[in-house]
Every structure is written in C-alpha cells, then in structure tokens.
Length: 48
Image (cartoon, rainbow, N blue to C red; front, top):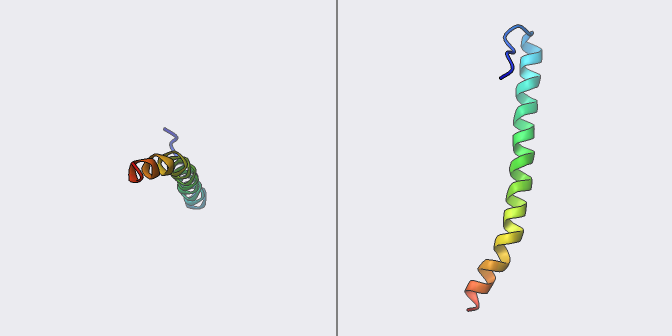
C-alpha cells in the first residue's frame, strides 16, 4: 500500500479522488459487461 501521509493534503485529496474515479470506472465497465451477458440469459429463461 502506498503511504501518502508524507504528502500534502492536496496530494492526498487528489489521490483519493483518483482512486474513487478508477473504482467508479471499473464498476461501470464491469456492470456493463455483466448486463450484456445476463440479459440474453434472463430473456431465454423468461421465454422458456
């Protein structure tokens, strides 16, 4: 883990915002991929 305690509060805030942004992007892409995979499966189950 990266120790940011030695850096200024502006750098710490920027690192936190960057980490949250990366997490949001990863979740957006992950849920989008899951939706593409799951939608046809759910439709097949509905019409079975």
